[in-house]
Structures are given as structure tokens and as C-alpha cells.
Amino acid sequence: MLPLLRTPVATPHTLEEALSLLAEPGARILAGGTDILPNLKRGLGSPSTLVSLHAVDALRGVSVGDAGLSIGAGTTLTQVATSGDVKRMAPSLAEAAESVASPQIRNMATLGGNVCLDTRCRWVNQSDFWRGALGGCLKSAGMNPEASFAQAGVCHVVPGGKRCVAAISADTVPVLIALDATARVASASGTHRLPLAELYVNDGVQNLALEPGEMLLGVDVPTHAGARRERYVKWRVRGSIDFPLVSAALRFDLDAGALTQARLVVGVLGARPKQVAVQKVALGRPLDQALATELAELAHRQCKPLENVPYEAGHRRHMLRVLVRRAIEALADEA
Amino acid sequence: MNEPRETPPGARLLSFRLNGEDLSVATADHQTLLELLRYGLDRVGTKQGCDSGECGACTVLLDGRPVLACLTLAVQVEGRDVRTVEALAEREAAALLDAFDRHDAAQCGFCTPGVLMSAEALLMDKRRVVSQGEARAALSGNLCRCTGYTKILDAVVDASEKLVEAADRTREPAS
Ligand SMILES: Cc1cc2nc3c(=O)[nH]c(=O)nc-3n(C[C@H](O)[C@H](O)[C@H](O)COP(=O)(O)OP(=O)(O)OC[C@H]3O[C@@H](n4cnc5c(N)ncnc54)[C@H](O)[C@@H]3O)c2cc1C
Ligand code: SF4
Ligand code: FES
Ligand code: FES
Image (cartoon, rainbow over all chains, first blue to last red):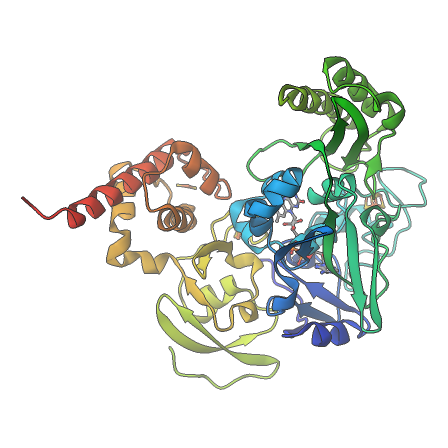
């Protein structure tokens, strides 16, 4: 029904093999395949080779060290959601992983694939035929050289816009940023680390700060001392399977009932998550009803969803305020 | 069917276990497991619905866990264990099939193979009476356009009860 292009698939067994295969121009990683295969079936992308990671055991697993939690990019979302270590040390990450798609998809999908998920837009995540009727856009033109439509340099979300604003829609990303996670990145020529927030740039065509040939090895979530409350919330239409239409990760560190750190990271706005500036209002205060209302207002003021994913931007903006308020109220009740 | 065939150009020989039988078959790199099952091996029990991960009609068990055959490449199951709805005709799934029958849990039946595989995975994993909530969560990736789900969920819970009763009977010697 939706046949794939005849792309060769490489099946390396070691990381070294995978990295050298990925160094070939046009090669792309296939992890769980739950994002890239639907996209390729719809003519989004035309890799020269797919480098499947399914046999690279070195990328899988959750481990705990002095510095914190370390999760391999190949770990499935089911494993992340059910790991005792993740639930204990980063409960909102388990919550976010559990909220992705369906059980079948979580059994296949990897954390690396979620962190590197392609951005989504209602004008692009459609069939070739559907997109062809519009003539393409900044993102879809050029993704498939065999597409039926000509190159088009327009954006249907922001008419006249020169930069694609397709939305980052991965559930684990806002959480990982709120928890100060770092990404471990490798290429055939070496390994480096960067704060997860810096993995994303403001361009929906390619929102990852990865060079060709680079891949994510895993993410590290630092340990913390003292009391912490954290939560991930997403709004979507069908609670059973849908992508988030707006989402928020919240993290509050407390000392003797007063906030010493506060994070509010919002997803599904543009190409990268937005960190709402909450410190000035929140630090030093208790986690209570008044703060819930104020931070919800702050999120509403600072975040402006666009018409890039289904459902009206105005309603998504309203739901963000509702979600944030309810989440903080629930965290305050946990005392 | 399990005789190795000649490998056409651009293809490779794939070995895996399908419903307890060791197979070696030719497959092309870009072929999905769903395409291999249906069009290469004539196992048409596994349904092709949306072909893009949304409906769950293509659910199969890979090493015992439910996955979507439409989003799995055939080459990814090398050396692994795949079970499809055809395997449920074996005796151990009789309680599940019987419960679906008694509860009228299938109407058009298109979703049923996928639903059964998700349900089978739940029952094999828990091996106890499951709650409606657990059944609901386990089947949340399976769309049904006919039944309204109520009869399906009742059947799954009922099957788990019957399995526990059967296990108790075999454990307690008759007095
Ligand atoms: C019906 C449906 C519903 C969905 N709902 C949700 C949802 O609610 N929330 C959500 O977040 N997602 C959702 N998804 C998307 C997807 O299933 C998940 O995001 C999943 O985590 C992707 O992981 P994967 O391993 O399958 O990625 P893949 O599809 O294998 O890869 C995704 C992208 O990441 C790249 N990549 C993968 N691994 C690496 C690596 N180690 N280093 C560098 N690049 C890499 C790939 O090249 C590709 O571009 C849904 C998908 C479907 C089909
Ligand atoms: S935001 Fe604009 S350019 Fe980007 S995918 Fe959507 S329509 Fe295309
Ligand atoms: S056919 Fe695979 S999920 Fe619909
Ligand atoms: S019985 Fe028809 S789709 Fe479920």
C-alpha cells in the first residue's frame, strides 16, 4: 500500500561499523523506525543507505553511576518507561516515555529516535499526492527528488516566512532539557558531549545540531540532592496514541519548602523547545496554588503556538495554561 | 516454504523463526515484515490497514512483545522469533479465542488479528486475572471501527479469568 523506495539497508553489529557506514554521504540511521519509516513511505526523505541499529547492542541499556543516570540511544521507550532506575531518579522521563504513541510503538521506538525525531507540520506529514496539490514548502521541497511537484520556497504556516517553523513533537525532549540532561554524540572521528538544549536549532527543516556522520550515543541525566518535584504533561486529542499538540515539562527543586530551582520547558511551539523564564517569579517561594496560577499565566504569555500542527493555535495556547496550572497544583498536593 | 530459495539481485537470505518453524527466505532490503508475511509467505492473517503505524491491524509478537509489522523491516528480524495470529490456532490460545467467540468481540474482524496479538501478549506477560484498565492500556494501539471496544475488553478480562481457573484446576489434584 505504501511501498518504500529501494533503499539499501546496512545492519552493523558494532558501533565502529555503524559510524563508518554513517560517514557515507546520504546515509541515515534507522533505529526503531517508527518515525523514519512512515516518513519515507510518504516520500519524505531519500537516504542513500539506512544504517539499522537493531543489532548494535552497545547502544542499549540504562545504567546508574555517581554522576547520575545514563541511557543508551538504542534503549526502547518501553524500557525507559518501566526501568526502576528511571522511575526513581527521573520519574517525569518515565512518564513522558510512557505517553508516547502506543504499546507496540514503544516496544520498537528508541530514546535516540525520540530525541532525534523529525519536526512535524500539518502541511508536510501527508502523502506526496497531498503535498503535491499545494506545491510543497521550504521543508518538503527537496526531501524527495522524485516528488511530483517543483521546488517551492514558501511556508504555509508563516506566509512570507524564510525559516521553517515545523514543530518539535518528541515527548521526552522537554523533560530531558528540564532535567539538565547532556547528549553524548559520536562520529567516525571522535566523541563529544553537549547540553541537550543545545542539540536543537531554530530551523524546522533540520532542527538538530548534528553534523553529517554524527550520531547520538545516549543521554545522561545528572543526579540531584534534596527534594524535587517533576512532571510531564501533554495535550492531545486521543489519549491512546496521538502526538502532543502542546506539552510542558516541569521541575522544581526545594529546600525547606522554598524553591531553589524551577524549570518549565514547553514543546510543540516551533522547531525547538522553549524554556519559559520562571526563575524570577518562582525562586524562594513555596510550591502552592498562587504559584500555579502565576506560572500558568507566564507560560501563556511567553508561548505562542503556531498553526503548524492540527488544532487551533489559540486553543493549544489556552490548554498550555490549563495543563501547567493543573500540573503545579498536583505537585503542590504531593507534599 | 522453508527451503532456501534462490536469492534475486538486491536481496538477501533471511533466517528467522515464524510460529515455531525455522525459515530461510529471500527478502529485499526495503521490504517490511508485513509485506514479507503477506506477499512473500502467504500468511495473510496479519492485516495491512494504515501501513503507517496508526491502527495496530498488523500487530505481531517479536520475541514475545507486540510490535507493528508495517514499521519493521524484514531484515530486522534476522535470528529472532516472530509469532502471528496463525499461531493462536494452537491450543494454548483457546481460552482467548473462545472468549472472543462468546462475547461477540469481532464484527467485521479486520482489527481482530492485531487485537488478539496484543491481548495474547498481555495474558502471557501477566499470567493472572487482568483488570479492565490493564486490558485497555494493552489494547490502546489497536483501532476497532466496529465494536466500540466494550466486548473486546470484556473478552480479554474473561479469558484471563478462564486461564487462571484452568491453571488452578491442574495444580489442585481432584479430591
Ligand atoms: C501513530 C504514531 C504515533 C506517535 N506518537 C508519538 C507521540 O505521542 N510522541 C512522540 O514523541 N512520538 C510519537 N511518534 C513518533 C515515534 O514513534 C517516536 O518519536 C519514537 O521515539 C521514534 O523513535 P525510533 O527509534 O522509532 O526512531 P526512528 O524512526 O528510527 O528515527 C527517527 C529519526 O531519528 C534519527 N535517529 C534515530 N536514532 C538516532 C541516533 N542514535 N542518532 C542520531 N539520529 C538518530 C533517524 O535517522 C530519524 O531521522 C508516533 C509515531 C506514530 C507512527
Ligand atoms: S512550517 Fe512552513 S516550511 Fe515548515 S514544514 Fe510547515 S509549511 Fe513547510
Ligand atoms: S497496518 Fe501497521 S499499524 Fe496499521
Ligand atoms: S471488528 Fe471491525 S474493526 Fe474491529
